[in-house]
Every structure is written in structure tokens, then in C-alpha cells.
Length: 435
Image (tube, rainbow, N blue to C red; front, side, top):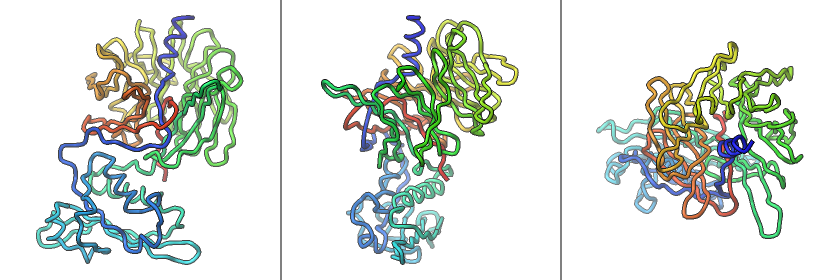
């Protein structure tokens, strides 16, 4: 039991943290894409602070990604608001390859019309090239969400990949005060940490949040009854459903790609094993067996297999089990500790928590070749969560005697910190793409 408790604690718990986030770039690409973001026309009349200031939010998004060099506002002396007004020579002179321009036009019933264009001034020496333009009508309260969407469009146009600025994150915030019981909060926030919202409070541990494929629900483990139980929580309505409350361990819920099943860890047979639960029929099926500790399931994109962490080979490694045949094969072989798998969208790579001589770090593992690349080097990292585009990893880290969240790119080119202001955070979870 002591060995079981130690391993499950190591694999399931983390002790990092934050509240409202202030991203700090610690490493960016060597040649970031230069972009000028011109303040939108009428924006000052529409927005009163930076919370819903379109150009400020877009600027923060792109700058914080580490892949863009945004021209400082004080360097801009020209302020075009449409593609036709962009002076190619001037923006080339200030070092911008691409220019974002737009306008915000008030409408009736608190609505605004937003026109936006992305102009390339570098590719064609004689004329500008309009890469993208769009018109939106939204409520004033939705301007920040629109800004993230525009950032996603810019990212896609300039990198060829889908952006994640409109996604959300979930995390467990643990607040400890002198002479008071610890408070556990299940919080969700924007990708940039703005607008954290608590959807659950408890004086007992909450852990392992997992987003449903449609981003509308979160499954998690709660000890509010002094015993681990798995719930599914509707983010919009606050309604929740008790899914699993067997004797022993109820842990590590993971959604199937179609959202119809949960993989979960139960010790009802005496040892922690992987099960699947049909959310419609409530039929429970045991997938792994034996006396090993099997935990941290994650589905493959086709829903046919589940990757999981097991000590069946003597040390924690990643294995794959075919859901239909129950056949198991070992995936990781590099090192004596690989856990907490997060699969890339293609399934060709996965993020793992890897232990080497320096401690625990985040690593990228190529499933086909078996090659492993360590992405972080502090030795005190836990709980990797992969962005839905497979480009960024959020994880728990220790920095200057604080528990914080950090992000690194899967190519190792970009890293950033999200400093904490209060509390400790456990196991960040990254949402899927949200529309």
C-alpha cells in the first residue's frame, strides 16, 4: 500500500500555482515574425480599458506566443484604418512585414461593427498584398472574445497552423491560510489567464480536470465526501453528475474522442486498473488487468486505443492497450520514468513527464522512432497539458520558491511563465478548440 500510495501521489498530484496571470516570455524564436498592429478607428470611444481593447488584446496574444515581434506603439507615426490606406514604404521602414488595421463602428442595441484586414507589405515590392479581411457584428461585451478570434486568424495566416488564443484552461487552485482549512477551487480562464471563474469550491481535494471534446463539460475527481469520486460538470449551467463512486480509487477521467465514453482508473478489483464507462448506458468495462498500477489513461484520436502509465515493467512507463482486444504493448523505453502522456493531434508524438539525472522535466517522444527530446530543464516540473494544435505544452513548474504554470513549445523554441499571485495550482487542463 505504501508503494501504491507513493506512485499515485507522484503521478496524480502536482503542487504548482496561480490566480490571475501575467505572462512573461522567457524564450522566443530567433526570428519572430514582425507585425504592426495599428489601433483600430473609433476604438477609444468604444472601449474604456485594456480588458476589451481589441488591438491591445491582439497585441498581447501575438507577443505572448513568442512567435511574433509586435512593433512598439510609440514607433508608429501613421495610423491607417483600411487596407487601402496602408503605406507600404513606411511600414517596411519601421520593420513590419505585416500590418493589421481595422475600425470599430457603433451600432444600435449595444452592438458594434468591426472591420479588420491583415496586409502584407513585404512579399510584393510594388503593391501591398491583402492576406485576410473580415467584418463582424458583435455585442460590446464580446469584444475580448472577438480579439482572441482575430489573433487566431492572424496566427493561421502567418504560420499555416490553427491558433489557440480562443481556447480556455482549467486548473485546481489551492489556497491555504493560517488556522483555516485549505480551500480547493476548480477554476477556468481564458488562454491568457484573463477572467478566471470558479465553478467549484471545496474544503477537500479536487483534481484531474479533463475537458469534454466539445468544451462544454469538465470531468474531475473530488474528495468532498472524504472519498474519491468522479463528477461531470456542465461549465455553462453549473449542473453536475456523479459518475463513479466505487470503493477504493476513482481517478484520472479521460474523454473518448466522440465524448460518449470516459476512461477512468478504479481499484475496485484490488489494483488500480483502466476501465471505460459508456456515458449513455453506464456500462463499465475493465480494459487492463494484473497486479500492476495502471493510471493516467488518454485516448488515441481514433478511439481504438488508450495510452496509460504503468509500473508493470518495473518502473513507470507509457503503454498502449487496444480497447477491443485488450492487448497491451509498451511504448516508451528511453529512461526509467515516463508518465503523464499527452498525445499530439496526429498521434505521431506525445508529451511525457520524463525523469533524468536533473529531476522531472517535460519531454517530447516520437512514437514511431522512439526518440526523446527534453523540452524543459528545471527538474521540478509536473502535469503536462497539450494545446489542441499540438504546438504548446502547459505544465506545473517551480520558480523562485513559487509554484507557477509555464508553457513551452513542442519544438523547444518558445517558453513562458504565468506567475502566480496567490494559491497553488494542480494539473492544468487545456480545452479543445472552441468554435
